[in-house]
Image (cartoon, rainbow, N blue to C red; front, side):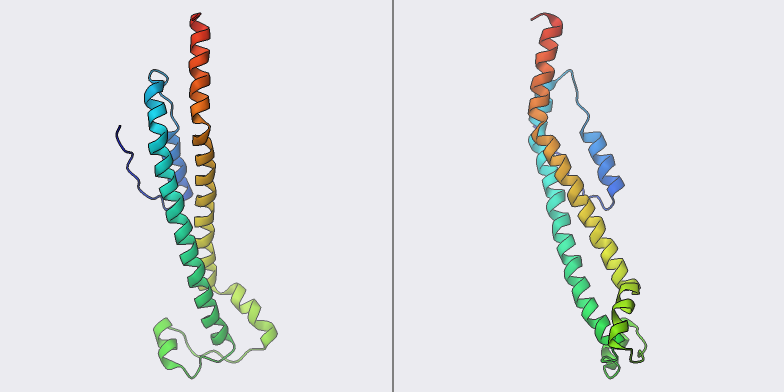
Length: 154
């Protein structure tokens, strides 16, 4: 049995295209399709795991950057020239504490990280759906064989 190569999709569209190719069922060789289930399960479980880890990594980065941005928007980083230069930020005038959440919500860096996290979350959800489908594939193949026998009068 050949193993199925795993290339981690970076977009939902890539994942759905990949699944669109893998979901095809060769009705002439149900035994091969049955043998392929394990490889497909492994493939999508690997993708699921990689994106779960990526999601957690992005989330951790988000919290680190959010803390820095909070310090930035409250004016606490103005004396830290090294950090400001590292991120390419100009000193920010002090703002009221009640206004900081608005600045954080509108911050492009934080929005980008949330978008990345959302992408990984969506891929994780799609992979979970695919794995559920693969779990029921043995029953689908059994039902197909039973139907073929019935049609042939066996």
